[in-house]
Image 1: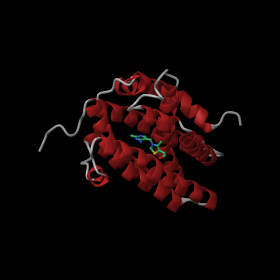
Image 2: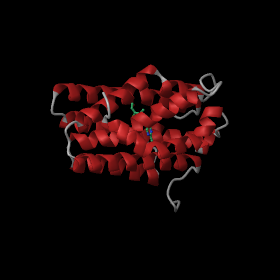
Image 3: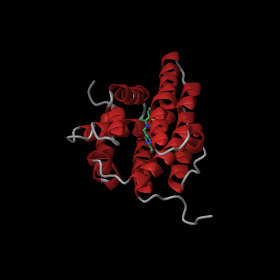
Length: 226
Ligand SMILES: Cc1ncc(C[n+]2csc(CCO)c2C)c(N)n1
């Protein structure tokens, strides 16, 4: 296919996504120097992020207008709850954190803002808003995973190797590609006015992704501790 919608999206988000690769947290994952306490903060926040995110896949399945789309969303939901969150549970075990404790994590400001934004636009709009909301998350982690996998030793690192291996894996590439294909299917024949709305969702979620890396790097929660 030539000139698919996700090519246009890529040209728009490329400066944001290349900034992820320059982010100290992501660089630390790639060269193995990332502080474990920062990683633990990401792990806990990401777990509760993924719980909310899973609702988006469930919503996508509910809003689907054909069985194929419903099945794709159900597969993405299963992949998140079982494959991706298993990675988090395995890392948590290394920190002696139980799955129950992970689940009890109090969402930080950025986690709350990001998941609330995605759930809001997805509930307000049709299935295309759900696809636009989930796209940057699934696609950008696979992009980061594959870029980090090129760094010598990143895949074999004793602690962060599993992270790089998981997000660069064929399974996660397939999940990201499912989201990319869904987006192109939805965008087909859509008027420019509607495409611009979807583009804005993908830009905003890409910016939220950057803020999520920042939140982990700075171990941010809320401005006032209670
Ligand atoms: C903040 C944040 N953004 C994106 C992902 C990655 N991700 C979310 S859903 C999905 C698809 C399959 O589970 C992937 C790869 C994450 N973990 N945390």
